[in-house]
Length: 246
Image (cartoon, rainbow, N blue to C red):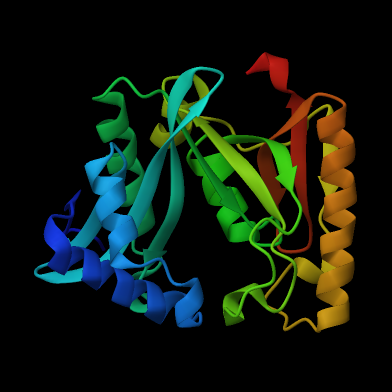
């Protein structure tokens, strides 16, 4: 349970350095690809967010977000969120996102964007079903091929999660009162090899990524948005609807 964990803004260079160290532990990237403490300082000083989840004095998760402008509207780009391995599945990521939403709304910021790997179905379920985000943009190899073992040597293809904080679907998803998705005008079936805890080889991952890339770009070009992930132990699919509905 997360009862002993609190989320608050990180303060000062020492806590920013702790975020950097946690980042190294989680992603295992080469130093050249690690966001330095100065980036956390800049975000904190220019209207972004550096949020920490603390178990007592121990930093167990963090979020780094920077400010952006899109169509003359300010938004937050949530660049990274990380949680210690032993604290996953304890609601820490959810606590960080809900604090992030409340803090942004307190400053009249209505949109938060971030990216995630469409191959990671747990993240897709969390972002679309649990938080109420939608996706209508696909970025091919956005960050290049990195040294992180979590990226498995693949191009860093990403979906852009669009979290419209005060839209009707977001509070419903957060409160858990929305119905489990069953059908939608558009469906992207997830390759079967991605379902279940199997260890996939590079060729399987490459084929699965190419399939999802082609399908998402085709549907997005038609004006659709991904709005949910439907999944079971043997099947999974992204569900899409015209984004003008949202």
